[in-house]
Length: 109
Length: 120
Image (cartoon, rainbow over all chains, first blue to last red; front, side, top):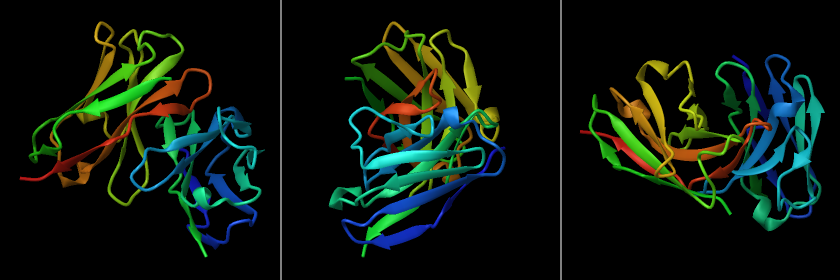
């Protein structure tokens, strides 16, 4: 099983700041199949990034993804108030076929 | 715009079978470009993929749940369904249905989720 470990667990930041969230895989994961999601309370996750670096439809360009192998990063260039949420990374291709990281919570400082 | 909507009982007794249906609108479950998945999230916790069904009826399940899970598709109704047997309190969660991209390995559309509580 490919285990995805996200760090840190919680981040306290202010609007306007830049943030990078980490997702580390226990073994090499295909960058073609690494995705990031945003989840707000009471809502379903929303796809932000797929293929490690491609933005999903309608996602603002302040969101960007990078990485390969075992280390992947989601960067938000300038935090907006609506960006405070929980972020999950997800990989495809191991066993089980899909796994998620445990999430990073972005909270307002 | 594709929309997915979960339906089913919100309360299930221990040892019984949880049954949910996902109705798809704005798109077709018969499309060969997508897998149709169930994903769950226990209260306050992370996401766990349960399994998927393809329009042909072929399936793939999370090994941790495989012995208890059945996912099926009804193309005539544009729906797919989840059955999880022998449930316990540990199966209490919000259950989401989602569309998985055949090529991208990700979930691009999700239902709003439905909370299923296992309790006597």
